[in-house]
Length: 160
Image (cartoon, rainbow, N blue to C red; front, side, top):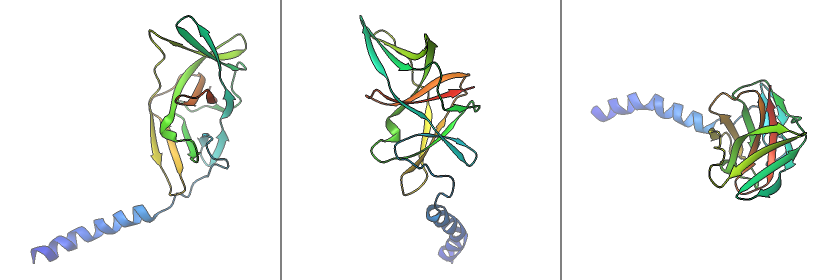
């Protein structure tokens, strides 16, 4: 009797659990793999792809990206990105703020103290490797970059 009662109570929760895992992501899908897209409702805006130039200065390393401002812009202080992962793991992406000066965007990594990465939450949305990347803190207006750890490849965007 107790077992039957337990099964009757647990059955709706088991059904709900199975429905959640059976559902597929039905929102907008990135058209290119390994490129983070800014999510604006049902629209996806590709981030600007660039290669950061490395400049050594004593114990410091300066990374510079041409252009004073990114072509990818968002008004959202806590942007959400969608990415279809193929060769690039979203867990390796780091988010940093850039300084704009002399017609380029820069970030300085010092041997004493480098910039701290901005925290993000990453969640897999579908079985075909669609990931949601959410910034956890409000970003001030300015230039930002997502970059895979250990790479000079960058994905730039601007918060305005």
